[in-house]
Image 1: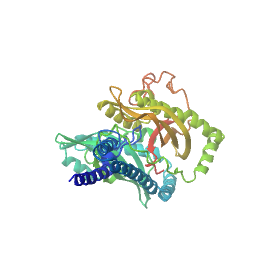
Image 2: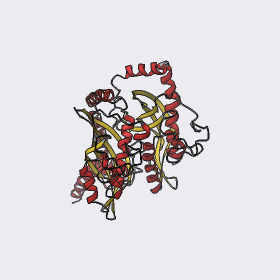
Image 3: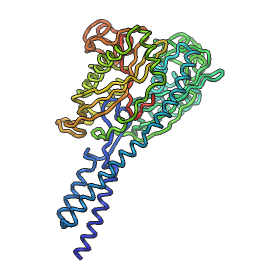
Image 4: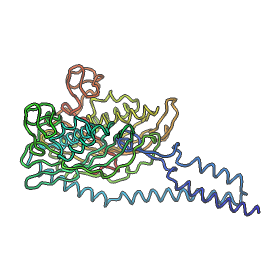
Length: 501
């Protein structure tokens, strides 16, 4: 009878071990850091960051206490071997999933988009990828903010009539707020005989309120923009605000697209980009309950994705600005990339993002602030300390009539952990550095030659940069600093496993 009990216990122990090793509750999840896994996708998981270690430890304790050494020792050794095998298999699977052919396919796709973009700029010299994505961001935000409200009529020149009708039908039935755009990417450009079409993939999250019931969603959407061929894009000061293209008055339209200031009917796509349609490609309920959890970095070992023609673009950029490329590249890494990286992460770690408001584009600042507020609400702080940059690779240079942009891949390490209000570490490690890499994109207005300045001051009036406000406007001189009009600003951070060029 005793032997039968022992055999049953052994069987149960093995089953429990396998469950603990394979269970999703044993997986550490979510990257922290601004621009990381917390930027626009949610997470969940177990209530500790031990990766299932506590459960396995308790099981081993029971095995040793209940079974004789000739059985318990081999069984524990088997548990350890199985765990090591599963961890190595997971690492091998990660390498397989993110192999070079995938990167090559991405580069081929990017090559096609870049060629189409060159053709578009030849037809419309005013077209700016930076400004267009800013416009998409504004339209996306207004769409969800005004959906089901009276204000939605002000978007009538920008949407197909079916969208206006759907909004009217849902008036006062639902609202959307706390909209955070994580990333936007042009996925296709179509140059047709009379129409230009651009598809944009948007990753975002927002809170949907239906009759008092709130649910937050993480989504990936594809938006299809059309515009009549032969029209020049608007200049920066106009495209950044929703206004009547005829008289310039702030957007105040009827349901039929008639400007209430000048009486002009703005037909969809005749003068402005408009949304032909959009669709949700992926949607899941979003949660911030996993803020203190971590998962292994999944993209640090991936090959770097370089822009097609990066060498020629680098030479052209250097010739335009009349400098030695090698010297400037080193200077840019040391005087722009490194200070931005250190200052922004220090501000993130102290929940004082206003101190670097002048370094961030509006969309990046809004995304970061959402997550800082989420940490605060949960009584947590994400700390990044002892930051060390090991390598900076310049991977892309883009330019248009109005802006220049440079993307670099930054390899770094830091102590990366989460503490609660009592200072207790709730996730990550405050002793073991964590290595990672990220792609950072910087933008600057054409004609600006300043690469760096004293980031503690306003580049326009020289006053302390302590009163920039949420809009990125210096309260001393009233000048907006966060558009790249004076020097580089950080436009977006993309994780290495998500970057596609």
